[in-house]
Figure (tube, rainbow, N blue to C red):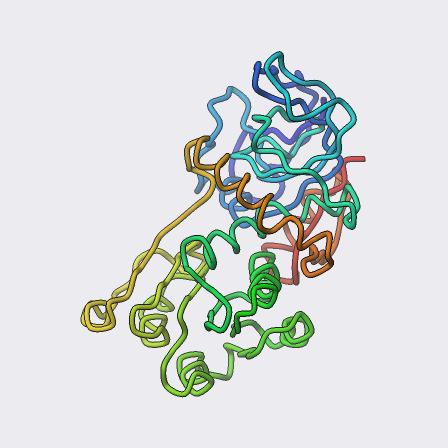
Amino acid sequence: MRAVVLRTHGGPDCLTIENVDDPALGADEVLIDIAATALNRADLLQVMGLYPNPRPSSLEIPGLEFSGTVAAVGDRVTLWRRGDEVMAIDAGGAYAERIAVHERQLMPVPATVGLRDAAAIPEVFLTAWDALVVQGALTSGRWALVHAGGSGVGTAAIQIAKAIGARIAVTCSSGKVQACQELGADLVIDYRDKDFVAEVRAATEGRGVDVVLDVIGGDYVDRNLQAVASQGRIVQVGLMGGGATSINMGLVLSKRVALIGTVLRARPIEEKVALTQRFIREMLPLFTSGELRPIIDSRYPFDDIAEAHRRMASNANTGKIVIDLE
């Protein structure tokens, strides 16, 4: 099969495609012919050498999510058959024509979403839903603040919040304001000329938001503490603005704030399976109903994957960047 193999680390030019052996198939695993994959910030960090290869393998093949068709199943697999259309998030290996994953990490492609478009669903919708609802306890009528509202996670978060009846404020650059508004965000804040703390406190009549989903980190962490309500939750899922910062611990104590750090990639297989199965029950039907949909910024053929990385690195995309392998 053809796959991106990282022999060195650095910029997009390190994304070289090679012919390698198909992955071995375990008894509980399913072999997938990948139709499409999609880019994530963690991929850029891995290419730069800032995110260690999470898969114990002699070949470092990046890629966190995919959609495709079942090519073969292991001896103990009962949930899938050859020809089934599936999608999933995994620790790596999706920048390739084939991948083998545990059968309970796979999700059926919704009938309303095309097979290749489905590659834009797993990572961002699972991340946003886990952060806002599972860990953030967002419910109908409550307020969420999501940074980078025009990103893949941000566009997923807006849709999830509206689908469950919550209200949502997002920060973004001026070029992405309209897209966030059209997705249904209740408050869109251009971070370049407005103070998100003042804006969300005004929108919530001084109370603050119940949940913050932050992919930025850096000096946003202390400002999140100012923007969150008493007994609110701040869920940190990324560090685009840096990991080292100072915060006002007095606010943490006086507001009784829960500051939660989380990643999906490093979790044990049991946790990934449990989260995936709950997502199938609670969220997947909302794609069929049309309440949720993947937001695709652009798509590239597999041979142009380096150019796709350059687009993401420039922060030009609104929603997901998809790579077509078929």
